[in-house]
Length: 113
Length: 117
Image 1 (cartoon, each protein chain N blue to C red):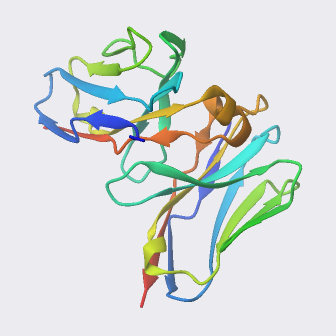
Image 2: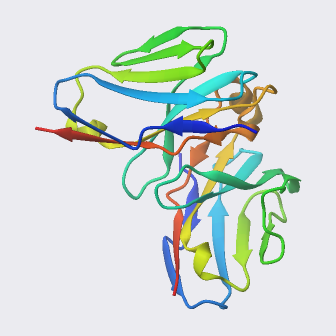
């Protein structure tokens, strides 16, 4: 079955870059996603990448995908205090629809002044 | 446009008591999901509805959990009787079929936090 793993915690200084890593096991995943969860709130989609891509950039966010190693990362440039949250990676199965999402355990990002 | 609305936000009950959660999805979203989020974990799918039909309930513990979406809009999730291990956040999400297929965007509510004593 699918299994998505993330490190639990990351602390960075404001203005630095943050890199959040994720490994997954289902090589047939069609899409991979990054969701953000702020305290007491639901999850919000940040960005996604199609499995035939190896990089996607969206403003301060850069997603890197290494399909060979089944490794996904999210880089946040110029990290701000408002970026403090829990970040979840998620994968679809081979059908490629969000109806079969498997979420990772989440990485808590703490941004310090 | 209103987002996904859930109630109650917080619920504290004693074990063996029943509890129900309500979800109102985004207008026009045919697909509705109930997820379970344990502390320090990612969400895990309990059940998915396409309109009023439960198309994936394989992860729903059917001995004590039940759900319904009678008119294909609002949904309720019920636990009876609740156990200590049911303490968690219950998240509702909705999506539009076209968007979900293309971007994987689920729209989540704020969740209902259940504490079973």
